[in-house]
Length: 339
Image 1 (cartoon, rainbow, N blue to C red):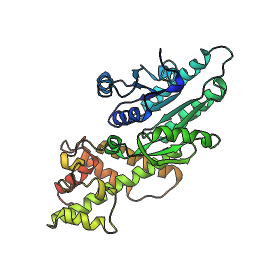
Image 2: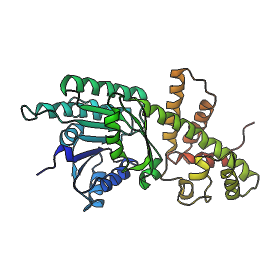
Image 3: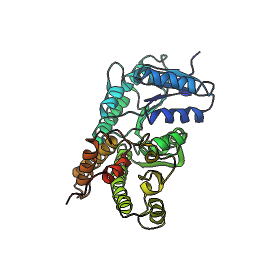
Image 4: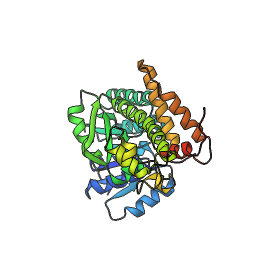
């Protein structure tokens, strides 16, 4: 007999980030909860089931429609706006249509069960707000206000996803956040530090926080790479230079947690050929999102355009394309100085 929707969580999107997030989530749920997984990649689904065999009940669903009918909590980790629109808004296979169908098919006289849906990817603000509005409309007109959508983008990259140390930035409607946020946190803390799950404001605020954080992270990736490249070109020991920087005013996440110079730190992308990190193409994408947010709110910026141009130049070179964003150090190191 299948588990009840109240005892079931669905996770949609088993990509580079989503797969380890779902794995940590399954480990944290406990044996009384069923985890449903959904992805377009059948190999990822099969690998997940094999890896997590014996770790608690796991099932597969084909799409968001079926996921939300079977589970009262649905977490999505999707790669972009088009995927979010398809998974949430498609009238045949989407989450919102499935939530409405679940209400239509319930036993006569029984109240609809509350459902929580949350998107954790780095998605354009306009898309998040359009999905939130659609969810609010469906909830009000068909679900007796029992459906809640939150945006909960993550920070920490693939390494944080693997380690279960992600930071979550949550946006939730203020009217329901006192009741909903503790529930959201109870799920997200399986994939991150409980102290790293933040209620940032209304729906969309989580995405804004994430965009601003990514904007800063992208720029510091280039700035730290430039500084360390100057040191290497000057004949300085990059490890000692890093140690000094990390005890001084130049310290940042890039120098201390994901140093761009190969060999300075173990188990970081730069020390394994810049593989397995936050791809430079994604870094350029989120920097562009931050730049557009600045433009939308009338905030003056100086560093975004030259940084984005640097990333674009590196991406255009086959040697650096598809690598972790800190490969911009290698691009600088192997390039001639322009006068």
